[in-house]
Image (cartoon, rainbow, N blue to C red):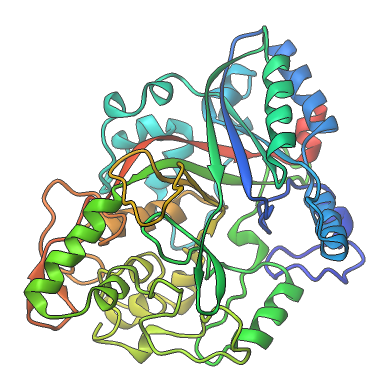
Length: 463
């Protein structure tokens, strides 16, 4: 039996069967360049909807085992690979199909979990404001894009490296929805890249390398990263339970909670703010960008870092190397969202070391919006289709609250300079402990979203 308290060893005799039971993209990303996210509302009789889901799961949904085989083949032939698909249910979707109470997915519980946050999935993203103690600052649902103001029941995620083939998959899937689902909107994602001295890298719209640091839940991936990047300061390993939680009913299936958020980035405002701050501080814009993000544009951390393989993405660092925020300020995006030791060093009384790493999320987002010329800095229309998987939405909640709040990790640190949303942000100190006060906030705006659950393959096919 696979132990979810550990990373998965692909050499385990039961690994393939275990991977066959869960959807792809959870414990390892699908890796495609293009995506289509079909946001759905159920309209047909519940049994008709169930039959559609079961058929789609049997014919189209990609299990983690199939995704792994596809990756092995792709490495050998380097073609455009195979299409990829997921099916996800929102809480209202479960209820529409007749599942409620103990039949709804529940979070993994541990001694550190805030009990009130167990209600996040049950309430849905629109109901998050009613959770006691809520401290993050999304706009009210009435200000979301119109499609997201509707009741949302499900999402189909399609991905491919072949845009023509993806377009056909979208057409085929959309045609099959008639009489079963209403298509509220289709969000298109496309990997954005830029060229740096060390090669072409995936970036987000502010222009910084993205996806450098991820929790790794497969033993072979962990060993490979450590061999290339080192682990003197940082261990990328994570147990399977970081993302996977057992489904209700005691059937042994595993799924994962998914957060989906459309985040619009004001690229012009971001770089204008850094330019203004540079004039006030005398610090170079590129250095200030690293203080805002926590990494330079090419992914090199603000905290000095070495790699074993110079072609690898540097990630072997810890904030014990920069305890005062002199290199990477406490308001930097990656320090807010992954404090790497700050919590156990600063919070009183200090929680156990495992608390911090248990709050990580597994990011699977992709950029949206066209940028034919990266030198043009748009104010609207581009951003990130943010996706993360976790076994408990508390993992996401803590990160977002910290990003939006002025007082994490210290009182007065200010909001996350990249994604922080706050109607009354205070001035951050650049760098932490320095002399320059400047407010940088609300560069990213949440335009809509929902909480979903990625059910097991057996659940989907049995509907």
